[in-house]
Length: 261
Ligand SMILES: Cc1cc2nc3c(=O)[nH]c(=O)nc-3n(C[C@H](O)[C@H](O)[C@H](O)COP(=O)(O)OP(=O)(O)OC[C@H]3O[C@@H](n4cnc5c(N)ncnc54)[C@H](O)[C@@H]3O)c2cc1C
Image 1: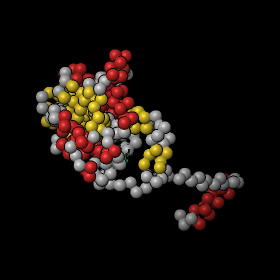
Image 2: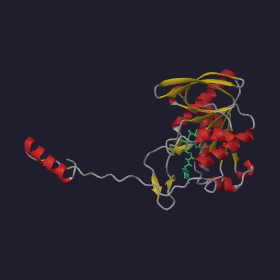
Image 3: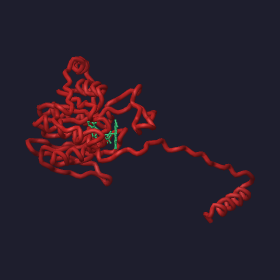
Image 4: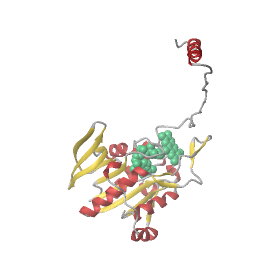
C-alpha cells in the first residue's frame, strides 16, 4: 500500500502579526509547528504501514523552513518526504495549493490512499483535501474517525457527522481527511530522531513538476485576499446606579431612546 500524507507547517501561536501592505501573515520570528490536525494523518499513515506494509510519503508545499516539519514527520515513522518549494508557489490560495499538491502526487505515480488533516489552524478552510481529490479525479471522504477495513482497491471507514457517524465504502485510490477521533499520535522515537537528521528530503519546484508558472502561486489562484485585519474590540458598558426600581426606569429610558421598546 502506497500512502501519501499531506501536511502543512503553521505558526505555533495565535499572536501573529499581519503585513498591511501584502495582506499576509508575518511569519518571520514565529515558532512553526506541524498543523495539529495533520499529526493524526501522519499517525494513521504510519499505523497502516506497520499493519499491512508499504510506504508512507509525506508532501508539504511551503517555504524552505517547512523542511523541519518534514524531518519531524520522519522521526514519527514516515519513510520519504518531499518539499514543494519554489518562489513561483508564493501567494497560492487553496485552489493553487491543491493543484500543486495534485501535480506532486501524480509525479509519484503510485498512490493508494492520500490522507490530509481535516483543516489547518491558520488558513482554516478545510478545502485543500476535497480540491485535491477533485483534481486527481478520485473519491473523497471527509472527517474519517476510523478506518475499518482497507485492502487492494477497497476502503471502508467510519466518518464523523453531527448526529453520530456513517459507514462509507469506496474504491481506492481515494483522498480522506481525518478527525482527531481516529488515533492518538505517538511521540518521536530516539531511532526516528536519529533517522530524521540524516534523511534525504527531495525538493521539487515548477521544473520538477513540469507546470507553467501561470498555474501555481498567485497567478494560479482564483481568489485574492483584498484585506486582512483583526476585529476592533469596543467596550461600551454602562453601569446603572441607584436602587433596583431606579435602575429599571433608567434601563427603560435607554431602550426607548435607542428605539428598542
Ligand atoms: C486568496 C488567498 C491567498 C493566500 N496567499 C497566501 C500567501 O501569500 N502566503 C501564504 O503563506 N499563504 C497564503 N494563503 C494561504 C494558503 O493558500 C493556504 O494556507 C493554503 O492554501 C491551505 O489552505 P488552508 O490553510 O485553509 O488548508 P485546509 O484546506 O484547511 O487544509 C486541509 C488539509 O490540507 C493539507 N494542506 C493544506 N495546505 C497544505 C500545504 N501547503 N502543503 C501540504 N498539505 C497541505 C493538510 O493536510 C491540511 O490539514 C492564501 C490563501 C488565500 C485564500
